[in-house]
Image 1 (cartoon, rainbow, N blue to C red):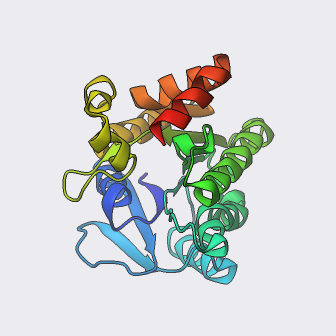
Image 2: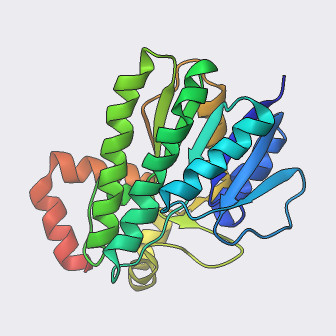
Length: 242
């Protein structure tokens, strides 16, 4: 039987790549977006704003009415608006919460999976991204707490925290100013490709007991390690880099 997946922000960038790849893994994929682009074969499009609980509820009900099941929720949609904390938290935190809330009953019936695409900033805050970092810390906390709460009920929750991602179709998405200033960073800590993140999503989907968190990218792993084990060194590095 074909499984059913819901991917937020699923018509552009990383979300699009996840949606397309899941269709090749025998999933019927519903991609949720505020402005869906009708260019994805085999992907069902749903127009909805994840920051609006009513729209999230309506989207989930529409899927369940048609498919009678839901096996996978990928909370991928995200924004970084330092000038508008309500927008940033609405998309990055409240959206995942609303969708988990309204899809949880169906996910429990099928021992489903919830994957939250978080960020290194959800574990290691950096200057000039206070609002974004706060939102990603929130979704990290939500996801980790739920992973413990829901595991005994057969629903596995995984936070995937990528470091800097390079999208070959656009530009480096994060850390660009630092990498232009310090060329050595490009050599020592190459950016992730979105394909690596997609592979991580698939590994979680296929695993019988997926991890509660996956940290992707050498920059993410090194930054997290130094910030935890050598906080004074990390603070010194931030002062120099920023």
